[in-house]
Image (cartoon, rainbow, N blue to C red; front, top):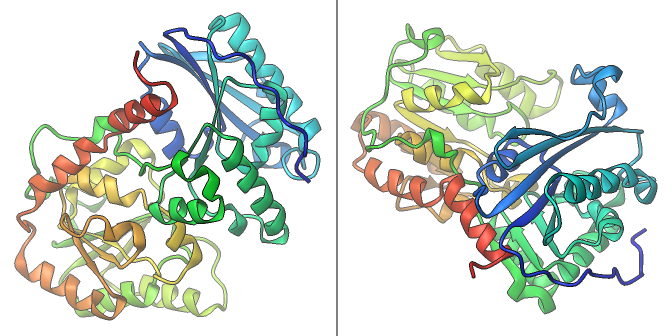
Length: 398
C-alpha cells in the first residue's frame, strides 16, 4: 500500500549541472536514451535492479553482486543491485533502502552537490522517492504496468496516479498512455508529456537509404525480397497475418529475428507453429542489439504485425517504429495508436488489409519514395534529441 505521508522536498538548487538517477535502466530502450543525456549538462546514474532469482537466471553470480557504481562512459555511471525476492512489491519500503543508499552515496561522493533528479520507471519506485527526497521527480512510463501485475492492478493504479500527481514531470513513450493518464489525473495534465522511444543515434545514416543494404552473413543466401520482423515471437504478434504473408509471397523470404518462447496449445501458438513450418519462413533466433541495425537495413520490407486489440499493443510505443525509420526501409504496420502518428512515413493498415498491403508493397519494389522522410523523422527523434528534449523539460536551459 502506498504511503499517505507527504514526501518532503529539498530546496531547489540553481546549479548548472544536474544529477540524474534512473531507477531503473533494465530495459535497453531506457538505457539507450539515458546514455545519450548530454554530459555537459548532467551526470547520470543508471541503476539496474533485480531480485536474486532473476539475477541467477541472467548468469550473475553472488561474487559479482552489488559492486560500487562504475563510470562506464564520461558522465555515465552504472550500478547493478541484486535484492531479495519481494523487494519491489511485497516489502518495497525495506527493499528500496539499498537503492536509496546507492543513490545518496553516488550523489554526495561521486558527482557532488547539485539538483538531484530521480527518474522512476515503475510506480513502485515511489517508495524510493520517499527515501531519497529528490529535487526533481520524473515518472517515466513505457507500458501499462497493470498488465505486468494483474493480481494487484488496483494497487498499481493507485501508486501510478500518486506518481503522476507528485512528479514534476510525467513522460509517456506512447501517446495513448499519456492521454489515459491525463484523463485519470486531470490536475497533473499539464505535466504529462508524450516522448516516443528514440532511434539510437549511432544507427542513423548520413543519407537516405532508398535500397536495402547487403544482408548479414546468416541470411545473405536467402532469396529476396527479404520481409523482416524483429522482436519477441509472442502472443502480441498477429500470427495469422504473418502466416498469410508467407503464403501469399512464396517467392519471398520471411526473416524473423527474436526469441521463440515455449510452444503450447493456445490458438496463437498453433498459428505460430504453422508459420514457422513454412519453407520460406526463417526464424534465426535472438541477436544482440549491436547487430540489429544490420538486419533492419537489409530488409526489402519491415513488418509491425501486432494484434490491434491486444492491451499491451494499445498502450505501447513499438521500438520498431524508430528503428525502421533509421534504416530507411519501407514498413507495413497494423493500425496501432502509436503507428497512426506516422502514416506519412509508412503504411498503416487494418488487419483485414495487411496481407494485401504487403503484397502490393513487394510488387512495387524496395523503394517506396519515402526513405528521406523516414530519415528526417529518425533524426528528429534520435536518442540524442529525445534526451535533450527530456533534459529541457526537467531543467530548462538558463
